[in-house]
Amino acid sequence: MAVNKTAFVVGALGGASIAVAAMAGAGMKLPTAWAGGPHGGALINASTSPIFAPPPGAPESFADIFERVSPAVVSIHVTSKVDISALKRSIPGFENFPFEIVPKGGAGGSAGGDDDRPPPKQESSGSGFFISNDGYIVTNNHVVEGAEDIKVVTSTGAELKATVIGRDEGTDLAVLKVQGSNFPFVSFETAVKPRVGDWVVAVGNPFDLNGTATAGIISAYNRDIGENFVDFIQIDAPINKGNSGGPTFDVYGRVIGVNAAIYSPTGGSVGIGFAIPANIAQDVTQQLIAKGKISRGYIGATIESLSDDLATSWGLGGRKGAQVTDVVAGGPAQKAGLAPGDVVVAVNGVPVKSNVEMTREVAKAQAGDEIHLDVFRDGKERTVDVRSGTRPTNAELAQNGTPNPGGDQGAGSPDHPAIGAPVLGMQLAPLNADTRGKYNIPDTVKGGVVVQSVKGTSDAGDKGLQRGDVLVQAGNHDLGSVGDLAAAVAEWKKAGRTSIPLSVRRNGLMLGFVPIKIDG
Image 1 (cartoon, rainbow, N blue to C red):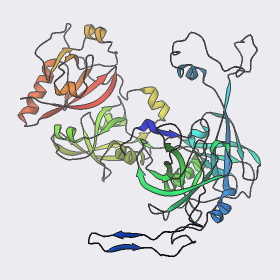
Image 2 (spheres, rainbow, N blue to C red; image 1 turned 120 degrees about the vertical axis):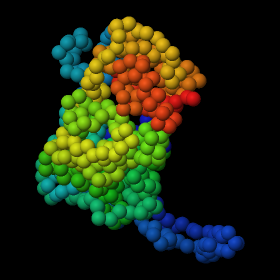
Image 3 (cartoon, rainbow, N blue to C red; image 1 turned 180 degrees about the vertical axis):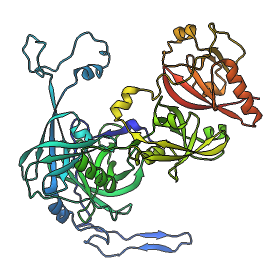
Image 4 (cartoon, helix red, strand yellow; image 1 turned 45 degrees about the vertical axis):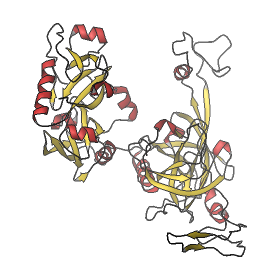
């Protein structure tokens, strides 16, 4: 789905819940309608007399469904600490302000500002639902992440203290537990699923309006909104802040999804929502209840989808796959011999057409499993067997920044830069102490050549390469000098290729491979 990921909004601090209700067609009058076909024939001939019953396929009311399922839906109220440093960073112009900004009266300390005063608290709310009679509740991870205290309010108004059984940031799901028994509960429906265009109903806690119901239709399956492990269901039913974690039901009252996000260019609801499919939600919640966490396979490689330009530059024509742009030093991929520039086209015999598909297939493995990768390298297909590790959390991956700080390449540069003829429209210099200092290149970048200038009309300029970028690889060749790049370009040109993929680092971070046209 070609939309800006920044327009997707998860439940937010306001909370998350799902609304469900709606008017079907009771009391609706259908006018006479004729639709002419390509030869003038009538395709639809509606009744000429008033109709006060809904047409076939539309329920007369959602009241029976709501009455049956709403007792299983709960409101979730969360208290958590406020991250003052994050608050300060979030205020434009105050990123470097020398004082901490604390909400008035929020710190709980004295007016004198004692250093030991506790941090301020914030409250948020969302939705959830019972999946068992002994108190297990499903919600979104982002609803309860960082929570110090969680209170669940049932449809009868009962307030119960909840504890977190497990969270999975990869699918944005969490399981809570409250003490008690004989709770009303609902079940995931995984055997069948509604068609696109079928009615769905959601119940939740938007804006702290407990038991709100909304209705709409399924608009699409397999929506990609930038998450690695979920193909979302798009439901065109009103979902607002506070709906997160609530269920979406089919017209039989079966849970077909867990509401998680909305599409919103403005921050408010525009009627387009996204739910985690029931089959994924059931699998994840069962694992969380059994183990308290989710384990996914991991090979320690940064990958990107193989674009048409990249496929051409590698001599792969119209092939699809995932290209390796970097590997973690000492990680499973590097130990198995996987290298930057390799193009993975299948994982354990399953074809992959993108980096997301490859990530999901690798994630299915358990630590210690052997993962078979079908790889193109130097125009030839081979198999690389990788022993899977355990995928780190998103926070750990983000903390690491680039998966391969330092890499394993030698510098291979002379002591002083020597500027020669431009290559691919770029003036280049060796990577050494002089160029490191001039362009603030971190020590973690161990090899490559430095871009000193880019001709604006060149393909490199069009593709966004800029001063200070470090080219670490051309095709399958590591770069230690400007001559290495010129030789790689000559080899690619001799092979009849019209472009060459360059692996680029900027500010120490790996950008991936960029296909640059070979002129002349």
